Length: 560
Image (tube, rainbow, N blue to C red; front, side, top):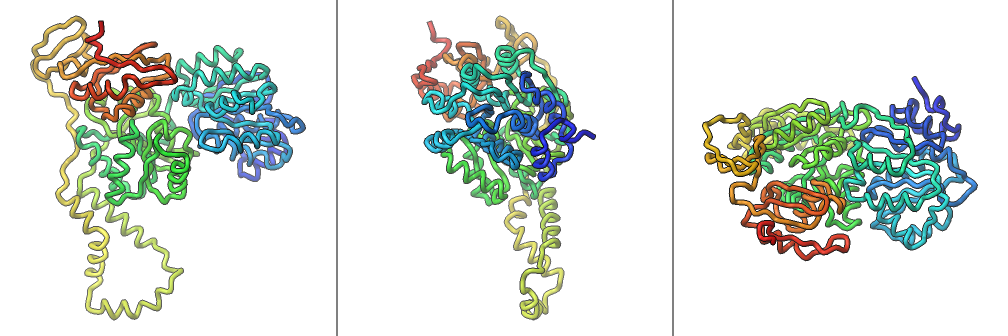
């Protein structure tokens, strides 16, 4: 079996990896490190999150750069503050025996003055988020003229977050780089375009199949009606009392609202979303990491870069619109060889999307019944009994109180004591679930005779009022209950369907259920929305600005 020493790594780095307990490289490390040690080869590495990518580029960088030169020689760009800090932490461990090397992290939400001071002290490796790095470039507070190596970590995440222009700006400002290393979990067209434009015949390595999911993750789904999503979520949590996980929502309003409701009902949970200050975000993440919080509820954007070990479950409160986002969500669990579970709560109309995701990750999705109230109670009861039996009583002076306890319960049978213990722990819980209804939705399709008429390339069903195209795909707004809005934002503005949907919903504070079909073009987009809230969306969005440009939104049917 290959060792780090066999890859040609410097003896001081070998000493550090040995002390960390790293003996054998992971597949991405084994294949990437020999290529990167040349220092002159552009490289594309496709591997899922949690496969050891930081060591794959961190160890070669530390070996290639000069300790004597106290100016930036390597630049690592990543999407979020959390990932930035994580990379620096790992590189600091690797360079333990290389005293002359210095690494600095620069990211938003922290004092830029302090970061400028750290840069001026002399540094060879800079780890940065795109926005803060550009700010430093424009202030002439960082010199990238002598950068030899540029690493783009989680490139697909950065592009999905709208950082394409920022990445191109950064690459244009590192004209003397000898090689560019791009690491990504997936290879969407946008990542491919960047590699073609800024890299010369890169060596491309794929660990596992591109776009496939982690084999250690069990993918499960539950089918319920849309009005029972929250109750289904609660029941899943209650049926898995030992879970430590992340719940994903599409919007920050959903994240905050669900967190508040679950907190009121006694769950150890908090939300992570874009409205939090950096201090609030750090506090939430600190509580989650030390397991004061059992659950974290987050939007896709807010969760970028989170790396927390031992996450047992990921729950998709709703499926993401972009199927590739599912890979990033589910990849938060099942890390470092451990087993994980990714659960999705879906409506029967979303089964087709689920099959698309299943095909993409190339793993089967298992349909599970939503647990009944009795199932939940039984699971909680046995979990409580196991916890009771495993309780450590060796550290307390319990012997002192045993005579008093024996006297107090002298006339009470063992069975009665057990009943009272259970009643104390479960009384409210049992009352809640004793008459709980069945939340499982019927997924079979009922076939009935239909009368249709054509409307151009659409077909309207008189029985259910739904509009479908000639291939049977449904148009949500074809029955007259939806308005069609025009907005002068499109893919050229850095949006993808998922990020555009979240942007629109966040601005209007509307629910996803009010939207129908979204048709995105390069310069403009069209949105179908429930007529009852169309005016609210227009008033919320029209006239606002995005990246200095005025947003125009109006009724598409009224445009001349």
